[in-house]
Amino acid sequence: MRFATAAIHVGQEPDPATGATIPPICVSSTFTQDEPGRHRGYEYSRTDNPTRRNYERCLAALDGGEDAAAFASGSAATCAVLAAWTRPGQRVVAYSDLYGGTYRLFEQVFRPWGLDVRYVERRDPAAFSEAVDESTRLVWLETPTNPRLHVLDIHAVTQAVRACNADCLVVVDNTFATPALQQPLELGADLVVYSTTKYIGGHSDLVGGAVVARSADRLVPVRFYQNAAGAVPSPWDCFLAQRGLKTLALRMHAHCANAQRVAAWASSQPAFSEVLYPGLPTHPDHEVAQRQMRGFGGMVSCVLRGGVDTARRFVSRTRYFACAESLGGVESLICHPASMTHASIPAEVRARHGLSDGLVRLSVGLEDVDDLIADLEQALMFAGEG
Image 1 (tube, rainbow, N blue to C red):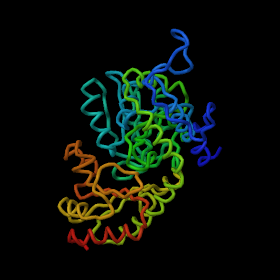
Image 2 (image 1 turned 90 degrees about the horizontal axis):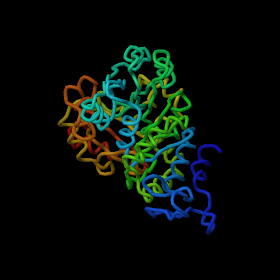
Image 3 (image 1 turned 90 degrees about the vertical axis):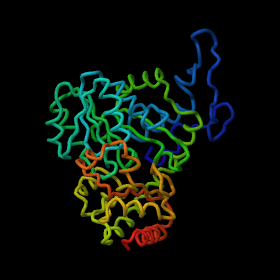
């Protein structure tokens, strides 16, 4: 099955008991056993649940993986990978531009626990080779990154890392691209992490996360952690996320088209000193994005010349772009990362990593793009930059 077909049919087989085209949501917390220890595949919904299993099967199929595990949030999925695959004294190497919640987990949860976290400032594969040593257990990549939308060459970085440490796992946070635009497992990654709250759910009405593995054995310790720690999504959230998967290909196509238009408009505005979108020929990683992605995504970041005060006025004035955290819904969102999504990163660290206080992040939705551009134009006028 091709992508759009798999998104609709995998894990959505008609109910064998009733013929229901959409499988019923299984809300049972426990399952009656034929005798002690002999059940029909399910015993307790923290361990496994039919609705969750159908959803996980679909996720794995769309990413080209052998198995997937769903979690109650993207942060829970990240935590599961770190807890399952690292031990005190081991190293994780990560590219420096990454989601604030991931940085918080690295620095405030796992570093005190004993993890050695190293940040790479350059995107070339050699930079990762220099940071990897024999104690390195994971290399953690976001691509495109949050919020500066850098694109890392997954295949090249994976090859460079394996040449230094064949046992090191490469993990890619694919939240911004989704499997509709980019499939890291086919490029050599071992695990893919998602905040399914975002594009996979697609309607800003659920919180969830997932881990997809290229080979099922890589998911075994993650599944153990999923059951032992219990940060699992409800059957209802799994149903909503799987319903979102059915329209993912169509939605991502529309997100990409609208974002390209918004990025082109922003590039013509003198109020912005920098416009970051992989689909622009001026983007430093445009060639890599063309090679490894099937579209450039729905996220656009812009840096206002007026700095933090102008940025705050700008994001507070939009009408169709809601000033809110998160991203990937059908509605457009705008945020100021320095004071919102990345506030947990100290100011001096943000500055070192190039995250300006004047940067605003746009999650371009599915409204009429001319309305969205008009909205941004009037917000610039209010901010004193129009």
